[in-house]
Image (cartoon, rainbow, N blue to C red; front, side):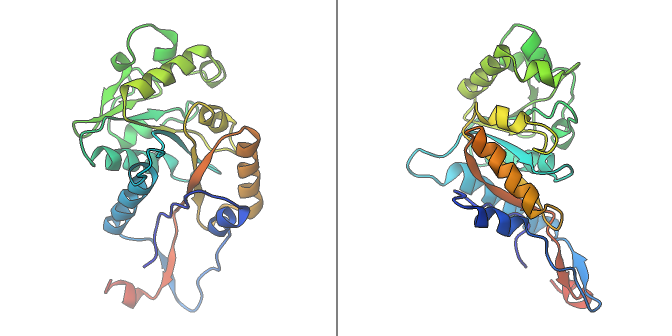
Length: 246
């Protein structure tokens, strides 16, 4: 079976991006569209984490990236949580997953931590950034939830937010941000300017070519590096009798 998640590294032209975003032909002839089982999905997440963060031998691999969907309900928070856990599982490196989707936070639920305090509190208050973090699964994964009383327009545009991002980069080997979709706001582009780049999450069978083009253009206009795309929620037309044997 084909991959659930495909990282297109070093997107150099529109064809690479739109090949992942183009709508697919619906199944016919009694075939049922099925999603991949969880084990292969975990394998693809591990490959994604390795290709994005760990396989560059020239020291140029990104250390701080933001994931964002092109549209809503693309599964970005789920992917961020899984990628963060996969990177943390590689060894002794310290990893921090940061929820910057202040409008609809979900990262803390996927990583099973409380949202008692977090980013919003860190921007308003003083103290070391670690005092606002929650311990995530495993020994070297930490989570910065959104926190309480988050105001996106005030928090993300503040100098204090930039200072906190620099603290995270200094404290952790890898920092993974979960941002709202590009069609919702310009938050991802704003955050991407402070990091090593953006990974776009493309919804299979839902993201349109024109929407993908506009998303890429908005990142280009903001001088944000596009690291690649992840194709999520892909389905496969497979006869049910054959699928049961896989």
